Every structure is written in structure tokens, then in C-alpha cells.
Image 1 (cartoon, rainbow, N blue to C red):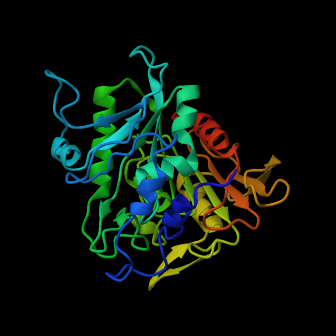
Image 2 (image 1 turned 180 degrees about the horizontal axis):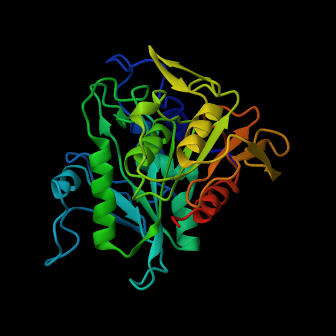
Length: 340
């Protein structure tokens, strides 16, 4: 089944190849219009934005939600959350007893949390399978387009926003408000959100068990990514992606690595072998590509907690039209890669 057109239009520009200008249109209103379905929470990240669309499984997460007696977040985290509230999908199974996995979903450039959640289908899956989905929003640039300050190649274009500090505060806030399993904290994102997922793995390796990046990339300059411990990494990338090239390229004048290089870089950091192994079976994840278009390779001899894997979408674009298997395949991979 194809996604609503407005969601696709909003996400198609995710991490465009040139910096935005004031002539870009300046609004992601189309994505908001499309986000009122099963995508979960839709509270925007800015303090001047409106409320939430109805969703039985979503809660607005503000700095004061933990209740009296709870300690504040360190290093100004309360102020970061107050300025940029996020939403969380809480599954109906949650009763405060067993600790649950947590997936932080990061949208692409110019999109938002609600449309990204609708595209990935994670909140709907979370209600069935029992995990938290955290839905933060990037800040708006001068053209009013949302972005994450990920790597130098994508997509802050000089805006000095510390999204690592913000997303760390989000993790802290979630672990204060809910019973989150610290060994099953995951990040995933598309395009700019994929780049940001890689950056979070680089800088918060002690907190993050695994990431899944769709059409993102790690830093080209390996000196800018020095994780304190191994992180499980899955890169998903279409071979015909025309915006973030499968083989790597340039965003304006800044180079980014391709999908194979991104995974190889993580394999080296994690202490894996340079040898890759083909995994079976191939997967059928994309509606408009015939057969099982997704081939999988993994680096050999990785340490516990440090897998490095590539899912290659043969003929896949920057915005693949995923079938109903996508969300489950993504989450199954994350769940199979906790911290040791």
C-alpha cells in the first residue's frame, strides 16, 4: 500500500543536496496534514507550536511530567526539554513493571516526527509488541524547515544547534519518567535523521545499543567519530538513491561516505574483521521492486555489541515505498542487538 502523497512530498526533500534558502517554500505543513493517522504522537518540537493530534498511545513529554520529587536533568536538560518537547508512544502493555525497549525515531530534513512515524510505522508496531517510540523534532532553520545538526555534510548548514545535548536530555528524561531497559536503547532515522543516528552512536556509544540508518552516513573524517565502545550499526540504502548517493558523494562541498564505506568504518571501529559475509535469506521490503530486492551483508568476527551490517536495496530510491514487513524487520534487527 502506498503512503499518503503529502507525507512522501515532505520526506522527498530530506537532506537535499544544497543548503536551503528562503525561496525553498519554508513550511512542512503538508507533512503535518498527513500525520494524523496511525503515526503516533505529533507534538512539534518548538515551544511556540500547537498541541497534539489525538492518539491513544501517545503522551506529550515535558520537563515537568516526572512529578514532584524527581531529580532534574543534568547539565540544563530540563531547559532543553522545556524548549523542545517531544512525544512518546507508550504501548498499552506498559504498567510500570518490566523495563521496555526504547526506539528514538529521527525524521529527515524538512519532515517532522509525525510524518516520519507514519512512514516507518513504528508506533503501530509498538502498540502490538510493547516498546516505547520516542518522537522528537529538529529545530527550524531560516526557511522554517526542520533539521538535525548531524555531520558536517547534513544538514545544519552552519546553524549552531547542539542536537547531541538535546537528544541526550531526551534519553535522560525518558529514563526518569518510564522504566526503560538501558541495554535496549535504539536510534533510527531517515536521511538527515540517519546521519544524526550515526552521530549519536559516535558520541553516546555508552548509552545506545544499536542504530538503523536509512539513507544516512557517518562522518567522512574518521577523527570526528570516536565512540567509547562498540555500537551495533545497520545501514539501509537504496542503490538508486539520487539525494544521498549509495556510493558516497558531496553535499555542496562537503563529502560523505557511501553505504559500504560507512559500514566498513564502523566495522573497523568496533573491532570486526574486514571480511563480509552474505546473509540469507534476501528480504522483500519495497513494494515497487520485484522480488526480494534487499540483500544483506555483515562483517565477520564482530565483538558482542558491535555488529556492522548493510542492507542493500537493489534499485531502491531515497524514499523507498516499504511494504508491511519493514517496521517488523527493522525492530527485529534492533531487538536482536542489545548491549551485552
